[in-house]
Image (cartoon, rainbow, N blue to C red; front, side, top):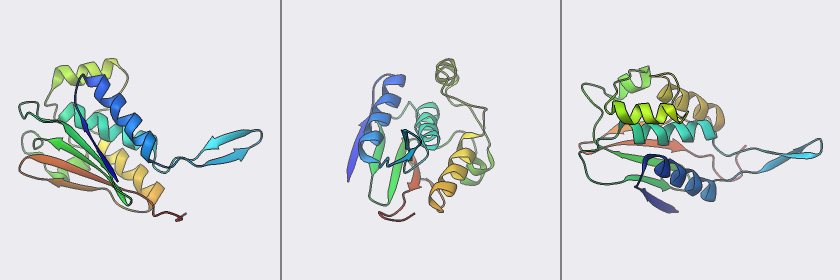
Length: 157
């Protein structure tokens, strides 16, 4: 459907991603009492965690943006570079945490955007599974990490 190359200052990248996803994802409302209650298609906490992880753990020696794709059936977050050290998909799913960029991680922590180290990917997986009934995919390629977040199909409950 659309794509966004995320580049610029740390917090601006996260804001760009949020605005882009808000533009493309469904947020139907249910009325409870007198107020509409938003029912987002995907958990905002999972989306925030995916973007913050991309910013915190990318390889900044590789010139290029974090790329965000919105498809009808999934969201893809492409993060430049492989994970540091010997971190692989299994280690990421298990919560192994290796800080590649300690100064960036500290800045994101100061902004209140990071949670306990090593819990992010597991939280994304749990929240997305609960919301969609589907699993998150993680692929480590030669030049990037690809995180695929499934979407519900239109009309699916």
